[in-house]
Picture (cartoon, rainbow, N blue to C red):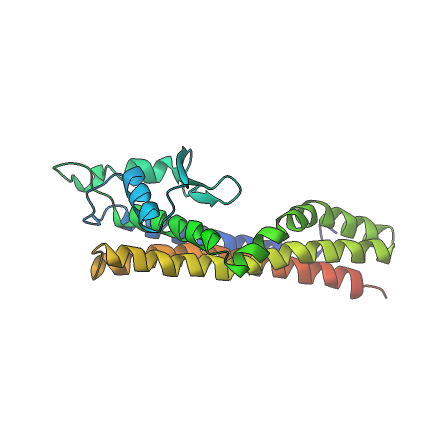
Length: 239
Ligand SMILES: [Zn+2]
């Protein structure tokens, strides 16, 4: 099966889609992390202020290592700011003087995560659905490929179909993620606009958020592609 030309085609397509989305988000982020947002705050103060303005005083803020690892943790009600964003808040690249200035990219990313915290507070139904799918998605993503491969090799179609359903949960999760991410970015744009990030700065924030959204679209597309390949393995090769 490893030498199946169709598998290689699916593999290359997945790599190309994922690679393109990752390149796009990195290059867009790099570009706008050099542009001053005009907000004279560091990443943590900015996150705190945005959260407090939304009545989210109970949400904690923590640093987290890595690049583009910023996220909101609904279980712990913690907003995690990546060290990349936190460091970028010093905006050394543009040589900003007179205190800390936040870059357009950092402001957009933080505002997006505050958007998730607000969705959680508002009990956003898509976010609730997405959270409900987490265990099934993790199980499906890990176990399903093995069930499908074993089912196909040993010709136990029932086992493969169980695997396909389990993988379907993982695919559903990637699609449920899309409206949640787009919704958080919509909130983020409203936040930064309200803070005076208009014109080119607003365009920059939108570009960063759009690039980030494409990574989730890429995730959903590649999951669907893999699902279709599995379905073909099970149902298309009986004869
Ligand atoms: Zn998000």
